[in-house]
Image (cartoon, rainbow, N blue to C red; front, side, top):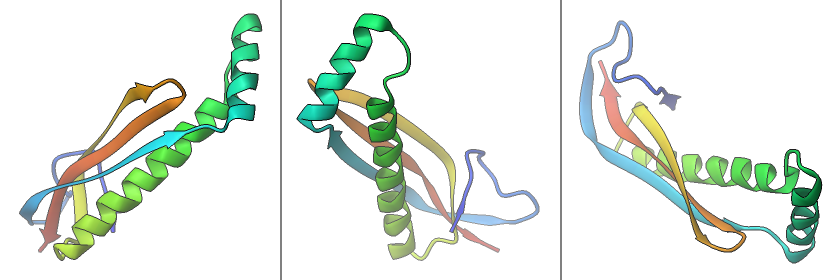
Length: 103
């Protein structure tokens, strides 16, 4: 599956099949959350949260691709990601784009 964050596929004609999305709400475990709290005292990257968001984007992207494949798509274009906090220590990540058939 070709994934692009531009609104076309260079050198190819496209047929839009519709919007596809994948979403996940991901949380960290208590131990990592405690350590993240400690890290805020000294500053720097909170690696546990970075890893959580990377994993959440991967899951959301896979779910978006699965939805595109169910439509018979060859690619998803104009891909975007969004995130929001849904509660302390948990974030929603959404991946969305336009599923297209290539010609």
